[in-house]
Length: 125
Image 1 (cartoon, helix red, strand yellow):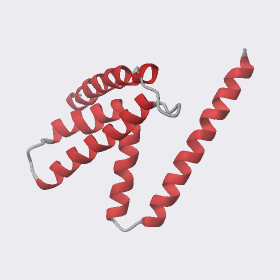
Image 2 (cartoon, rainbow, N blue to C red):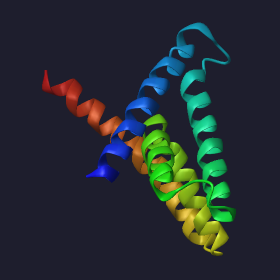
Image 3 (cartoon, rainbow, N blue to C red):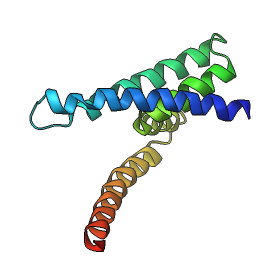
């Protein structure tokens, strides 16, 4: 139960911060890119890498704090950070083909799923 609360609190904070940063989309324009989302994805990837890197070399981050920050906060802030971290682990294990397959599938199928969901929802009403 404690672990669920840690993940939930971290996710709550990460989601709120993602929402606030995503408001940059409304005020910061560059080539029509969704800058808030891009910022969140890159920052989240850096943060999860930093936390996992610290955890790998030190016990400064307890297992509970790791749940709060890595799974909860970074998971709520952006799932892209988890995706990036999983790819790093695969690369570190020498699974280059798996990284390529996972990346292409995730991006392609994710975009396709969004498109199909949008089209389905658009035709329901």
